[in-house]
Amino acid sequence: MNMATKVETPDEPGTDEDGPLYEARRRIYPIAVHGSFRRIKWALLIVTLGIYYLLPFLRWDRGPNAPAQAVLVDLANGRFYFFFIEIWPQEIYYLTGLLIIAALVLFLMNAVAGRLWCGYLCPQTVWTDLFQAIERMVEGDPRERREKLKTASRSQRAFEAAAKHVLWLMVAWWTGGAWVLYFADAPTLVWQLFTGTAPLVAYLWIGILTFTTYVLAGHMREQVCTYMCPWPRIQAALTDEYAYNVTYRHDRGEPRGSLKKTEALRAAGVPAGDCVDCRQCVAACPTGVDIRLGSQLACIQCGLCIDACDTVMSKIGRPTRLIAYDTEMNIERRQQGLAPVTRVLRARTVLYAALIVLIGGIMVAALAMRGSEGVAVIHDRNPLFVRLSDGAVRNAYTVRIVNKQPMPRRFAIAVAGVPEAQLEIVGGVSASRDGHPVVEVGPDQTFELRALVSTAAKLPANASLPVIFTVTDVAGGETTTAPDHFKGP
Image 1: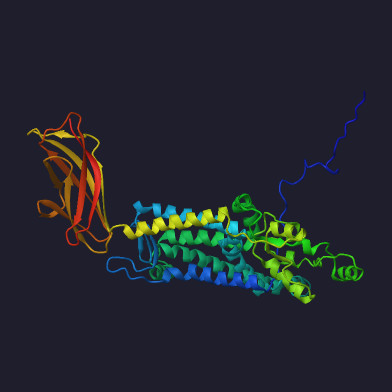
Image 2: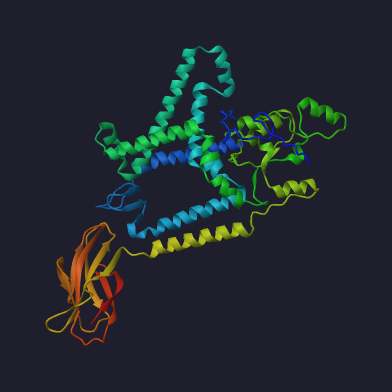
């Protein structure tokens, strides 16, 4: 039995041996649109960039011996200041809580209305919007640029291109500069940057962030959203049929056709959709998506295609919102002649909201109840105990006392839990109070000392007694404790 074998060549359909590993980039130059979603995006851009650029210059009086910048990451002293809140390194769990809340807010936004974060608040979206606005201001809309290729001189086009890149670099430089201002006193660092006396690391980070902002927002743009960002892949697994997404209402738009064609079909009594196939939705999309093909990975759900489509629908006298925030469930219901339903409150949204409130409440309560002092105790590991010449047993500890107030404070130290315990502090004792040693801790500082606890009482074999160190503010009476163990032979 003879069997013929078909050998595919690279020119024949069905072979991909010599095909590209990825899709070649298509240059995307979205047109300017006007409408409600564009206005929302402008408002959010102004607010978010205003906060980012100006917040380092906001002052906040914390009293003497404390920085006066409202938001400051003080790496040198291990502090994070946010208005009236001061976070110490050992309180890193607050940062963990904020990250968990941020993730849950992202999940909640996605469950309610898809990629709201991507379309309106993501830094990549915000800065790309700004860079595209500069591009349109200098070089004009895509239509104008195509005309200039035919009519404008080469020198004019070169001048406009140079002006655009200079403005991009200025924005990128100020973006990097604003970032480093969160790590030092902003007015002081600005002056140092202009006089050339700032630390080298400041110039280094400004250079890095200038480069990344210029490249990501000015050149890579939609490539970041489509290929670099992991959120579109995660988001697709978190959505459901009740989540609102930017949707082409194909139940109303199909069959599509030109305006004259659809008008002729309707005059003849033949069904025709509202979509006139003008492709303005594609021209307005910052990632080049044709929303009429359904939900796609590259769609950031910014709503600009809605504004573009509404403009066309208004001009031809047809109802707006052919493209709108809608759910797959409602499209199916309309096709079945049923009324649309809204289910914002459902299991996953209630769960996300409840977790946000719970974790946020725990963090607020912890902040409200935390003290302005602290103590940590570490037992010496070698030796665990020492037998003194008089028969007493002594344990040694390293005690670290924390003063979170912007003023010096005096603390009395006491121990409990060990019978006939005697406490001795090695150095640093400024006085005594009721027989307890007193040490002074500077403003917003920690103080480390050696504590020796001894007892002449008879202890059980292999003793391991709980011992409590108590630190009391001499002036205010606030106390804090730290547990450990007293070891015996």
